[in-house]
Image 1 (cartoon, rainbow, N blue to C red):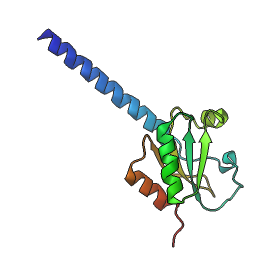
Image 2: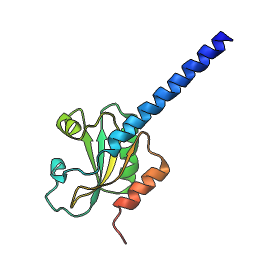
Image 3: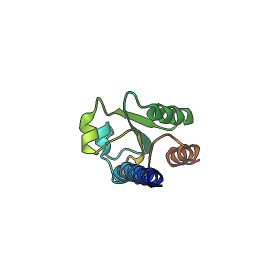
Length: 133
């Protein structure tokens, strides 16, 4: 009986730790509500919207996001945090991928996603970034 209690206790601690870890990753992403488009090479007042993908060299989920967004034909700018540590620090990027839908005229973040892309997330990003017909 004691072993069962220990196992259950360990599982509860692991589950709580995992939930806190996931919440902290989303909280970092959710904390970015605006970026400076000039940080990414856009002129002040630029028109349109873009997907901004913070990635790292060995991030498989980053590659999946890049592939999905490139196939959809939306504007995409990839920032390799291993090369652009200055931007990773400025925006407090602690894990990759982080995908933002950004309005270029004011830098407002319209949506953000982390982890592997889900079809509904890609669809939402595409709907935000595709020009109105």
